[in-house]
Image 1: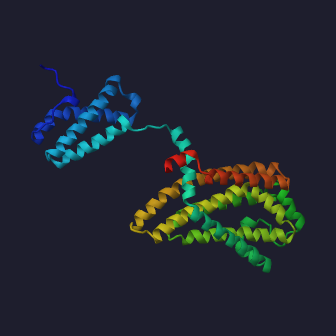
Image 2: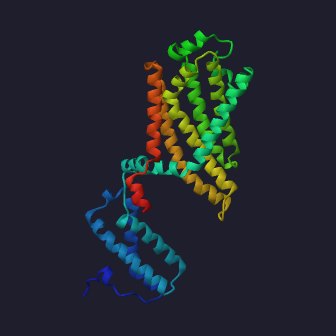
Image 3: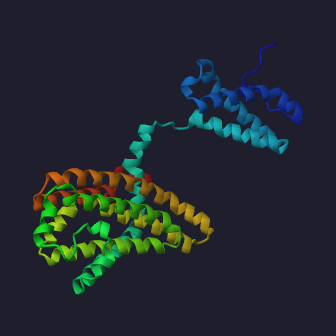
Length: 343
C-alpha cells in the first residue's frame, strides 16, 4: 500500500493551500530542475529517467494548475504553476530547431516574406531614388557647378568636369589603385552601407530623414551620370555600376522601405499606441534589414572581383541584369510553403 498512484490517475485534491503544496511540491521542484537543466544546456543533457518523467510531471503540473484555479488557491501559486506548465510545454510538444534550420528558414521564407510585405514602401523608396537621380542629373546638366554641391570631393576623387574624357574612360577599365576607380568604389560602397543603416535607423523620425537620404543618394548618382555622359561615357559608367549596383542599390531601396515602414507606423498608428505600432513595424523591417546586410556583402564581392576581372560593357550589363532578375524572382515569386501557409 506504499506505492503512490500515477500522477495522471491521482484524484483532484480539495485541500487548503498548505496541504496542497506539501502533497505535490516535490514533483514541481523536480520538474523545475529538469527544465532548468534542459534550458541551460540541452535536452540531450537529461538522463533517460528524466526524459521519461518529463511528460508525466508535465501532466501532473497541469492537473495541479487546474485544481489551484478551481479551488481558488492563492494567486501566487497559480502564477507559478502557469509559468512551470508553459516552460514544460515547450520541451514536451515544442518544435526545437537548430541554428542551421533557422537560418535556412530565414532565407527560404522569412526574408522574402518580409520584403514582399514592404512592397508599398519599396515602391515609394524606388520613386524617391528616381526623383533624386533625375534631379541631380538635370541640375548638373544645366549647370556643372551643381556637381560639387551633390558629390563630395572624397567621392569624386578627381572625377569632375575638369577631367578629360580619356582620364574618365581609363578609370572605368583600368585597375590602378588610387589612380583608378578603386578609391571611388570603396568610398561608394561605404557611403551606400551608411545610407542603408541610417535610412533604417532614422525611420522612427516620421520617415523624413529616410526620405531625404534616399533622394540625396539618388542625386549623387545622377550627378555622376551627368559628368560621364557629358564626355560620352554614360553607357560605360552604367556598365561599371550595374555589375554590383543592381544589388547594392536594391539593398538601399529595401533599407529605405524598412525605414519608411516604421515612419508610417509612427505617423499613422491606427488603434495602437505609436510605440506599439512602431515595434510591430520594426519586427518586419528588422527581418528585411537582416537580408540587406547579406545583399551588401554580395554587392561587395561583385564589386571587388567582377569590376576588376570583367571589362566588357555588355558582359557587365548582363551580370548586373542577371542579378537584378535573381533578386526580383527571389523576393516576389510566391513559394509553395507561402501558399500553404496563407491558405
